[in-house]
Length: 149
Image (cartoon, rainbow, N blue to C red; front, side):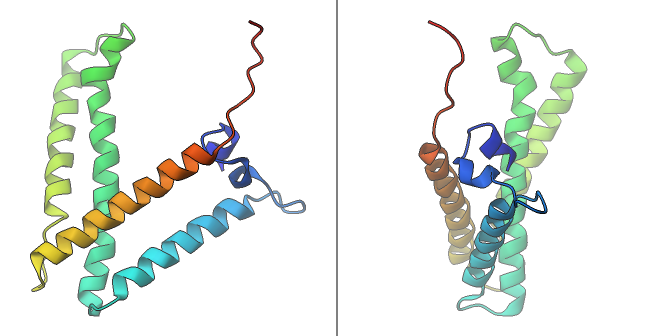
């Protein structure tokens, strides 16, 4: 919803219910996507593998976000002329390493299944979700500039 308000997604996501003022479209979208990924992970697998696929895919999403978060004090702050203190850089490197390790281990199943197929399924979910996000971003209408030129 907030991404719709900020024109990062189509405005459809920002629409609120007339009576209850809730982001019905955003809630429905998240529900449908979650249901689709949940059902897709059940195809051709047993319960334990299905759960691990969902859990590891979620871990991968979080770990990738944290990789970016922990890279900010190391890379992006210099771009804006801000220098991070050494303790923040050490903490960021530590978080970056832990996030990278979590990403790696989320591709390895703990159940006796085909490891390559498992890793491919996790990667496919992550790639498809990011492609969907990029497509939604491209569909948005750019905000009108209030600045006079």
